[in-house]
Image (cartoon, rainbow, N blue to C red):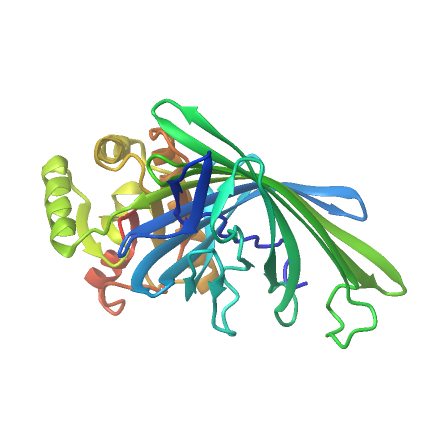
Amino acid sequence: MKRAIIQFIAILVFLPVIAAVPAGAVTLTWDIPHNDRLEIMRTAKINYLVNNRLKRIYEERNIIDLTCFEKQHNLSKLKGVFSVFHRERGKSVFHLREQYMADFGVTPLGRFVMKKKDYMPNLRHVPSFPKGDVAVGSKWTSNGELVLNNFSRPFKLIFPVEYKLSEVKSLKQSQIAVIMYKYIINKNLRGMKVPRDFPLKIYGQNAGIIQWDITQNKPVDIDDMYRIVFFLRNGRRVASMEFRMNMKTKNRLYKPVSESEKEKAKKEIEKELGKEKGIDVDTDKRGLVLRMGEVLFDFDSARLRGDTQNTLEKVIGILRKKYPDREIIVEGHTDSIGRHGYNKKLSKERARSVAKYLKKGMGHDKFSYRGFGAQRPIGDNATKTGRQKNRRVEIIIKLH
């Protein structure tokens, strides 16, 4: 395999719209309003085993942003951003490891329309709904697909997914629909013409519960227990590599934010910061950007200076007041002086220090960090002033 982890980026809920009909039945369809963004945050606690022996425990998170950019007859066209995060056991903040982009469509019944070159989302057609009304206790089956890209080339698995509308219950002032689903993957590749690094066999199983709000047409959450095992060649022997995951998914719909609204938010933050030195506020395609220079750290250090805590506390106050539910990404940058590997490591450690401090003061876990070294300069590295601009940490409040 390319790496000793499996990226399980899945879309399990878009925005199910359920219209109540007589005799206790409901109609299930998929829909995301035009220009709205659905944020799907999926967190997995993973036990990684080799030959049935536990080797590692860690966490992976996928944040999937889906924006509907066009409505066609029986198809919603979506722009997708798929972000993969990693957190080792005992660490407090996720590291943003990689991102993928893909545009695709989804029909009202949950079938995906994809380009052949795209493998994200890698779990497809889940959930898929039957035509017509569905009563409590009803069951249906529809094929799902899983595209694996962990080997020398991607390949697709197709398997039946079983569903059941388990109940419709009251919660506060809403009606909640509960859908149970499960599937088994059992694929034998022995004797097939596949690359040598492919597994000999793949076995997987998943059991999940989807809940969404019928009254507000809003997804609530998903709980999954997922297991997948790869049987691989190991000389003349066969070795097993297994991932056991307990996964929780939370979903939230966001309205689009215009450029004028971004500019207004920028001015409000600048007013809140007042005369605070060392922070510039900007906007770009990522959202709002709080850009902090060298005031945070001493030379060649990733340890936060004691006299910068008041500055960060002010930032925390703004985040808690204005953006309590938004994803926050902290990025570290350096100038071009020194070795690339060293600069990348220093920028990553500085971003982690800031993200860790900010997260302590917030009420959510949607924080991550990454370091770019000298890859993304905003000034001329040939000048002292330019290099000073490039040595920075950026706190990004995601709005798009």
